[in-house]
Length: 123
Image (cartoon, rainbow, N blue to C red; front, side):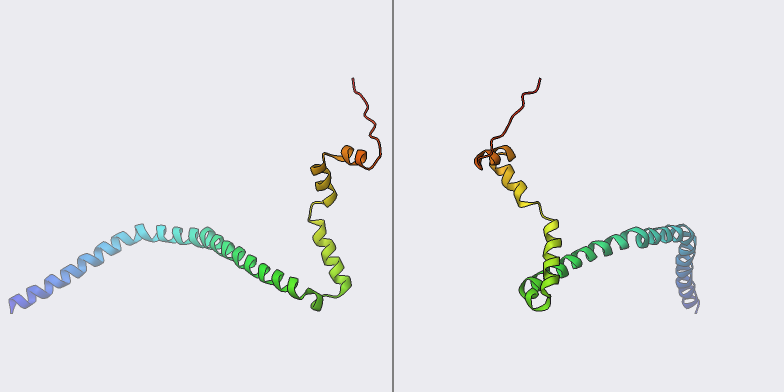
């Protein structure tokens, strides 16, 4: 009879030790867990959501662009199509600038067209 009681006391003692250790460590771990969770929800999670959102936005923009290129004549009125193409053209570098850079500048283009370039010597 005594051995059964000793065994129950031993098991209860082990559980008591575990509970005492957990209760003594909890005040140390809980604030750090709260701080880590605040840092996670404040910085890490929004950053991950933002990066994922940019990838999703890029995917959807590419799908929409492919759809519009294939179907824009059916779904966009001519005046609106002209306005959209005009706005898209504003974001490009003008073709004339690239031609002039490749040809050697505006002076060379003027000379090729027959307009003489007057060069002024500077002191």
